[in-house]
Length: 112
Length: 112
Image (cartoon, rainbow over all chains, first blue to last red; front, side, top):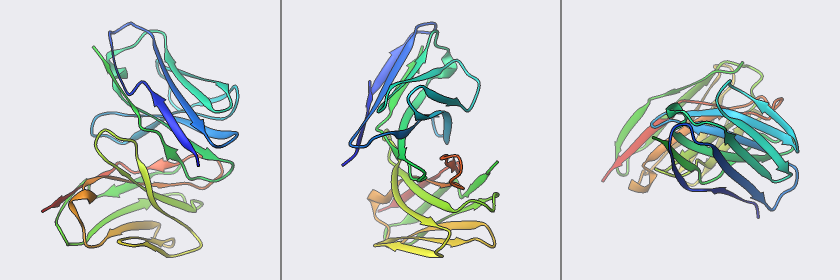
């Protein structure tokens, strides 16, 4: 069966520091991968998605970037965090042309 | 692009009563409609989904109905239990971009 992992689970970082969040999927090949951000009490905002290694699409201009160095690994990064980067970051995957997305457990990021 | 509106934003019901959450979408090409349940501090979990070739789907106490003419779909939870308390998100997709457009969420509280 397929599983998705995210780490770290929680992170507290000072403003201006770098960021690296990791997402890995097991049990499937060539998944579509997604990064979402969820502000407190708000909906899901799609940040990036990838249909293959090295293929990244950005949905909103921001202080963040994404990379996909391996088939089942998706990384969210920032060179300098802003207060507004605080939130709950979710990774999700889907397969092929199907629309069903499955979410990871999330990373709670607090920027102070 | 697709726009999904979800109502109500909050819903409180007595244990054992039914709960209904409604969503409308704008893109007539949308053909896939999942529902997610998100418990506090966790990632959203897919609970049921429906495709445009059917009008209703049931899974135990949960059902989803779809009216393509009116472009709306609804989640029905019967015999609610305290563990049903969570935020519920609807979503829609036309399948072409492998992306989901999410509603803004409904906080469901089941009172014992």
